[in-house]
Image (cartoon, rainbow, N blue to C red; front, side):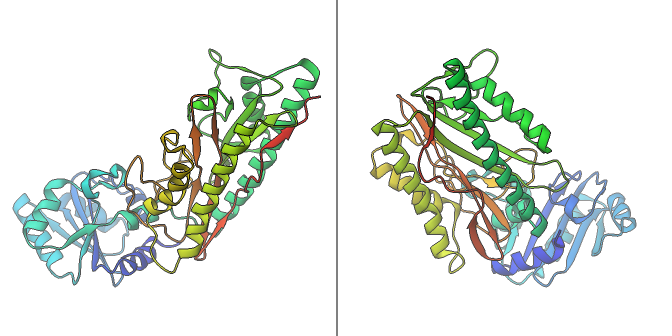
Length: 395
């Protein structure tokens, strides 16, 4: 994994800032483990990363002693009283040339990056400091993927594409043999396949026929699941990562039809979603890295097309989410979102995200999903592109 201090220096420079001020209490900030493992902080601390790669730490005297013995590289300054803390913080930040980045969310829209306490931010602003949001910087550091991580994501994507093919094939076999398959049966088949191949997921895959797919997060269960029969539209959404350490998720959704000739309504909405996904990726590909791209812009590129096509009211979630190696497939980086939030974070190199437009109308639901990785400054689709609805032979 790339050294966080080097990434921090590059990120501060790219945002044309003078420094990044990390405010922590009791070691809770999610970036601290990347800086130094096993820092047992018990009080309020400040970590000032300079654009020159320097690090200054202001910590209460008891924590300062722990930091000094931890081997962390940086200038450590200790305070004893709250007044001394404020005086030293002003002295430390007063030397910064340029804006100071902090963990704030403009208008409170992006809660995952709203980590700095209001009091400290207000205090520094009142004292004349130029405070800006560090949302793009911190999100990138928390979701950064290295070369090995991208390799693991490509392998996971290849496995998932193979797994959905196997699931569609099994659906066809069971319908031909028994007249029907079942959502829960296919979900369990996929979970067994994950275990056999060494992959993990935080939740079972979604297997939903058209009427159930009207809810974006429907998932079959013991209490509620439907048979899959000839003529059904089928959505399969599956996400997983290797059990190997530091692996990255892949996350895909594909549509299939049990039979030869999907209804016109199915084909029409599929074409709308395919075009929306293509427009979204095309927008990113055209502009990155010529200019900064915000997450909300990429969402608009897809959403506006779906609205023009007449389905805007049925596209009820963001276009895409950050992907990393977290507990689940939703990472802490930039989302493609101008619906649930106004995500003004930037799409940054070394990160990944999904593109997954959907239409959830009263008669049936449909979604397409693939993953994009920005690796070496180049956005690439890494989880396939569905060209047409998969036809499952059932006779």
